[in-house]
Length: 286
Image (tube, rainbow, N blue to C red):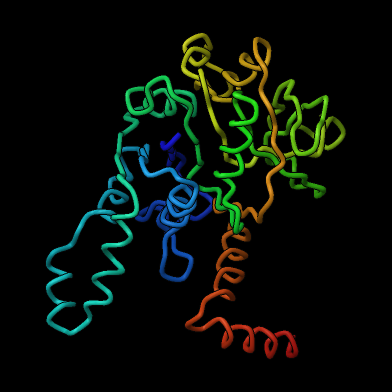
């Protein structure tokens, strides 16, 4: 398995007004956009063929991964060849392809556009507003889980807070270690009707998914929903919810984005220690 699909849908309304001009996937964690971190996760997991699904108003994402010869020339003449190498590394890590979802017909429709790219092989689906961080990359964890089962794998984590109602929640049975047999997914259930405390967090290994997408009708919001296709797959074959290790940030949420910016910045070699000192000094004053 060497292919990943990254859907970059949604209007990013929680980040308006900035997302009026800049897609949420390009919002930076200091100086690196979210989507670049997700691609790094894919590459570190052995996925070097990547398809990014964009909407018509997100063509600027393509520009980020294009070479900028004018900028490169200016940097070279300024003696900053190291920056040119860094910029080229951003786009040379993987073969990055793009396809445009011209109509907002839902998550399942977006995934269906990847069929020519993936063929009938299993692939990793990584949502463009979910950032996961771990030395053992989350996508790789799910790939390894797939190798054990040969089945579709849904990445989940335990969520004990009330914000679990913002996510799809796994209905599971027959747990064995980090593997849970998936009965279905309940989208945004109320707290008094949670099927479990396992939230679905934007990482999947999908196999045979296109057959199920073809068989579903329009669901919530009058769109074709990936959850509906997965529910159908659960009824007819084994699907597993795998409890992955790592820190997950909701990059479609302002507080989640701020957390990622702070915590990842603390790991920076160039100013991490300075930031740590600043945070300690700030905490003493508030």
